[in-house]
Image 1 (spheres, rainbow, N blue to C red):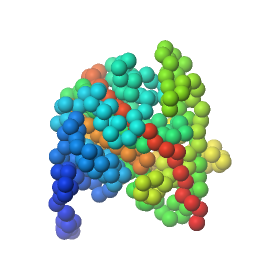
Image 2 (cartoon, helix red, strand yellow):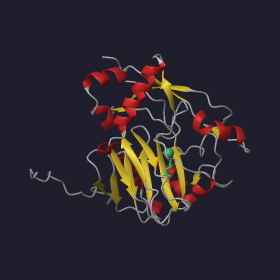
Image 3 (spheres, helix red, strand yellow):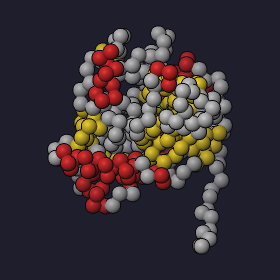
Image 4 (cartoon, helix red, strand yellow):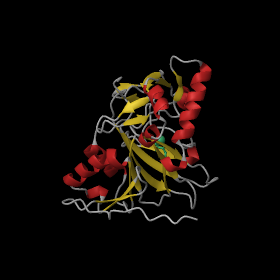
Length: 298
Ligand SMILES: O=C(O)CCC(=O)C(=O)O
Ligand SMILES: [Fe+2]
């Protein structure tokens, strides 16, 4: 057995002026954030959180018991522009059209790897999720780092991926729901009437950092454009197996009062469905994003 020297770890230093402390959880994804009450964050703290999002990709907060639907939306408005709850799912109630509720009692599950709402032209840049009701055990959520997934592909495969375009189609996940929908829903201020497949580059350049990520997910990608069915299937199988390697993942065990803010431009996530008939309720809002951009060819 070889004993490895412990890697040098820099102690988490508070941000000089704002009191925030970012405790890194995995080498490239996830940080626990200390020193902030999200219901009463200062403008400087909000600015630091917004800047930290692209760097850490997923930010975890605990003890946020004063965050409720109104203050969750207010926080979102300080971090960006809050979207409607979801293209085909109305908000949790008429006072909160921005809150998308996942309630296990009404089929609210997310046990497939996905990035939120990639089946529209401009998917949300980020999401803020709050635990409302939790099962005694289970219901953890996992996020995988799409930048690390890109960087850890071999160079020739990265070169192939750089040139590919994926079709994102919400029909399998949401088509039935859309057909049964009782209320009208809006997205980007317009009535959302049909799920139309959308193309996005397989490799996405982060608009803030310039970093590349492997931007495909089994929740919404139907196929790779312009290749055979078999090629598409094998390429996607390769990418998905690679993205979800354990070393690309940060996993969260929830407590009531926990809030998670993540970057949808560089991550996929998966909510474990392992709690039987216990109830689990989560409230999410999303921040408006921009159209994914491919790398400039060399
Ligand atoms: O329930 C969860 O933990 C995550 C659900 C989800 O996919 C989401 O809120 O975007
Ligand atoms: Fe999600």
